[in-house]
Length: 124
Image 1 (cartoon, one colour):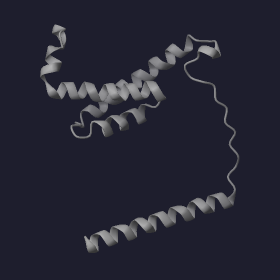
Image 2 (cartoon, one colour):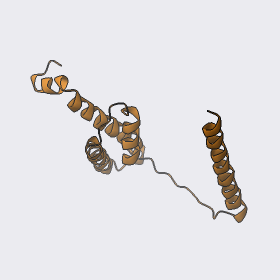
Image 3 (tube, rainbow, N blue to C red):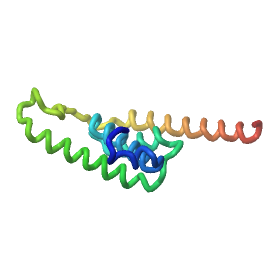
């Protein structure tokens, strides 16, 4: 980097990785509006060198990004220029058949996972 105030960041790997993790969290948060998703994605992307002390820094950066996102959105009163699209979702009450299907699916997937782990432990 040619700017003199950033030379320290360029030389120290820990600081550079911390800024990279916070930047990833801020980018995902500003794109999708989900600070927790941004943090989890930054952990996933930087998992080979992620430092636990970066968790709070990334959360602060992602939360601040979301706050700025909502403040900027307040200036746009016209829905054509709104950063957050207006979405209306109608949710019906789930029927008992639907709930039973998902409970059964959860049981089948859980038992399949147990079977897989048992086979792996015995034969591998």
